Image 1 (cartoon, one colour):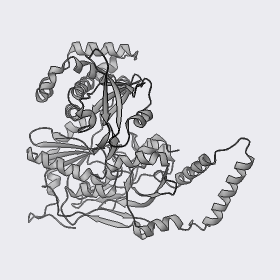
Image 2 (cartoon, helix red, strand yellow; image 1 turned 45 degrees about the vertical axis):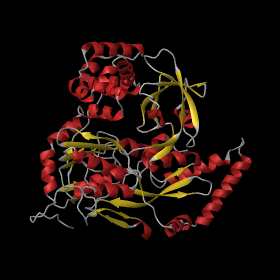
Image 3 (cartoon, one colour; image 1 turned 180 degrees about the horizontal axis):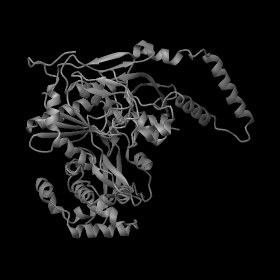
Image 4 (tube, one colour; image 1 turned 90 degrees about the vertical axis):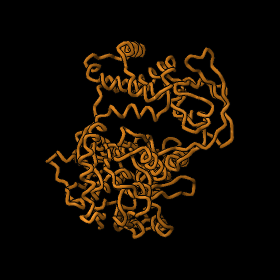
Length: 537
């Protein structure tokens, strides 16, 4: 079956191709001198014999599914089979909506806990808050519930009702709320705000059907607030629709420039994508943040910005996912996602990393800090390409940043505090008894300080969860610990957007980006001709 880890990486750029191309994919020859009909006959013969003679009764559906997965794994890490029962969830991720009550949630200490109600959702309208615990659904205890069961119980057709019982800090008794399910929008813009008087910040977490429209709205809002320069954060954005990557790039790049192109075995998979003059925003200094988790559509945007000298790319080498898939529905309601092309950046770079060592190695190496594709590793010979102005850039394994800036690394203690959600629990408890802070976010952001007394209480919570405490790790990570405590308090007092506003200002890569805007401004001018008109290529 489709594993969770694999699910993170098969959601790459999606190219919608015509019926004739689908027919070629469905009925084409085996290639390499093979005969597809003889191969199918051989497979059927093996399946029949296993079903008839195996020592125990076999589940042929599992055998066939396993065979399909095995077949696709022989191709590449991103050609995958999607079972019928998983297809809805996979589709929802990129359709931009689902039907439910509208909460972000976690299972905290085996209890279903609201992280944040989604903006505009039924849960927000009814006043549900971060930190609220849903202790019953339709009168049935949720203690020990799984995430899958939460989705099954809370999602449902629009207009249907579900009753939940809420336990809230500071309220003596649990209370019941009947929620009418509704359409819930899933946004691509995770956060959008001004970092200072002239610097805008936008974090995209996916490339779904509404991404370009959401980005346009965010850009217009920030421009009305006086934005003169922008940080576009694509860290941990694993991709999405190809056409949305093109539309996002088009927001920043002058018309008639090639943004990306695809090449495959069938002619229908070959396409060139150009920028337009419609909706292009001013040529303000632009910095794109990427890391090992930036893949696919994120790499298309970063590659276009870098190759066309539109802005500065900062962070860590991206994942290196340069394959294009087409999703083909099957008769039983499942689907197969097949790689049909490679994509290339404007300078001709192939971004796809080698997957010759197998799926596990492919995923692990993509997240490895000792990245063999990092530009500072002189033992690896990578193909060199050139931007519009002649700057050297590298192909063959992700986007190498113009400025390499590694993210801060937590100690094991901090990793456990995050993983066990100790910061969230403390933030929920603290905000419940300090609700007066919610009156003024600007004052909170500028003036609130995590005190020694708060740290002592936080230490007590660590002990309560029987986590192993290490003083050296605590001292090393104390700045991060204070920042995360403050961020989680902000999330509980307001919402997730305020969490990011507090959290991001202490991020080392964002701080480095702020210092690099003079260089980003210089890069942005490289694409301007002496006449003042944009260069065309």
